[in-house]
Length: 528
Image (cartoon, rainbow, N blue to C red):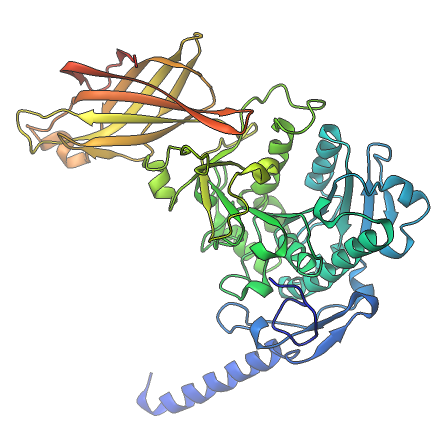
């Protein structure tokens, strides 16, 4: 998005044969009514006093992707409330941009970094995740933390909340500009973290603040924003650095599928997070405003982004060691890849000599060495656990299948490895997220994931499980059940606090290929 200099610019502001003719006419009338209702505010300039004005033109409307575009609430109806927290005021101070003096000014320190947290649809600033994030930030660093409560605007019907979000964006931008103008705050020290609709609010605010430091979008809302112009949604030009965490980005999900930041992270592919169920029910419960279903089923994939970001703060190696989680030594490392399928198939296991192939998801995403190179979206993929701590360790196994006496034969199944480290640690990792057919002479690189970091790889107990389809299992007399391996290596991708993701490999090549008998573990000494 570009900065808004004038109202009106295309930037953010904000049967039977004889019944056929009748059916067409009825459909035309129906669509005309829908169009009239959905575009009732097109071309209108809506002003909010000192906040500025919004213009709704045809760019904010799409019959396919954004058919409803109602006029937002009045500013007073939304009633946005800001609350400022610091290590000296852990309970917070309510303030407004025009009364930042007095007690609230003593809480706000313009020399410190400022985090602004914005909730999404049908939520509020007293939500558990907002409170937890505020507390974790203050435990790890001496900051200004500002929460934005727009519960009245977010509690309406979804299509209305989408419009209200634009007004809240004006409010946030007005606040930041006031702090910059009146209290000499540096715009580069502001970091807005928004979830769902809150992510787009962050974008609206960023488009009106020159030099805003950073925006983090936590699963930005997709309904009404997918395939829309960049000024309608959060965009990578809304701040000096924009990072996105996609956790419900699918057709039946609530998140935005498109990569819109400088770096976009897609944990577990960016959709249907581990331990989550029924994405279609979550989506329609939100649309139909079914409170019970929405509150009990929605806080899964869509809100997992909140939990992942909070975990990244707890375990960050860059923030002050005070308050750092001692029970979580791993990090959320994403790997640059074209697709999630390529990632789980082991095609993106190297960070490269320049380190551009890996990035930390969450609070430390801004440490990515290539963040200033804005030559297109960068997608990073990773695997997580289904419960805290969500982080884990990625491994890559490289397997070369030896030539069989009958070269046309192949084996299909799973590989599981209990990997041993030189320090005695053991990690059990599944290396086949889906069944593989391995033909003689082929080399496969397969991704594995485990909770345990075994550091320097030393040995592995490898189990091959033959898993053909049902017919082959009972009627194939010449199927290859054992895997004949001529080469096997395991790579541990371990995060280093010097912002380098190292790859430590251990491998072996046998003069005589060995059999991995089906369902019989075999100890393999891995020596480089």
